[in-house]
Every structure is written in C-alpha cells, then in structure tokens.
Length: 118
Ligand SMILES: [Zn+2]
Ligand SMILES: [Zn+2]
Image (cartoon, rainbow, N blue to C red; front, side):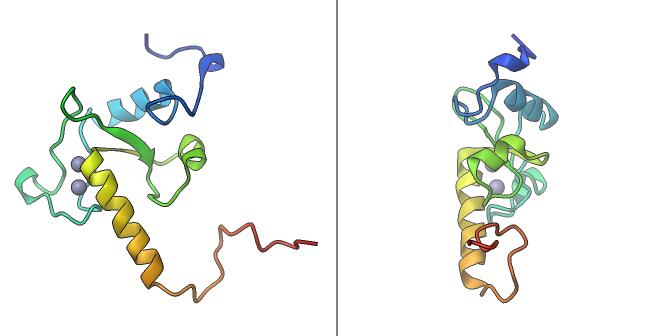
C-alpha cells in the first residue's frame, strides 16, 4: 500500500494531495502535527509543538509550508508540513491577517500576473 506507482498520483484526491506525498510527509512528521506556534497558540503544554497525533479522532492534513500557497503549490512544493485541523485554520488565519495588514510596499517576487500583459 505504500509508495504506489507514480502513474496513480492524483494531487486532487483526498487528502488534498497524493497519498504517497501525504504519507511521506506524515512519516517525516512522525504522524504528529508539526505546528510550532504558527497557528497563534504557543503549545506550551507540549513543549512548543502541537501534540495532536494523527488518528481517527484527529486527521492531520498535509499542506504547503507556506500557508498562503495554493493547493497546486502544495503538491509541487518541497516544503510541506503536517497540521491538525485546528492549527491549519489558525496558521492560515494568521498568515492572511499578516498579509492584509502589511501593505504591499515592494513588488511581489512571486507575482506573475504583472508580466507584460500585452
Ligand atoms: Zn496542531
Ligand atoms: Zn498550532
């Protein structure tokens, strides 16, 4: 069941990204939420890292390390993290809040929409 053939890779089937990538990330995370406070909670009880373990009660999601990355980016990203639902929500909220409060004072390096739209 592990390491299926590449041909069966489907980035958009649950859970969000390919099962192979998902399992690889989860294994690296030791099946535990990798949030180290990005969600806005200190996780002091569990030594600074969320203690949620993947299981039937809590299913972890594998997302791009950049919380604002698109789902497609999550598939191709080299940086992925396993997050529980609570932390994933918190991380995204924190990142979006930071983005909206920070005025775009400099050109976005990742912005491809501004390229010579002739
Ligand atoms: Zn968590
Ligand atoms: Zn967290």
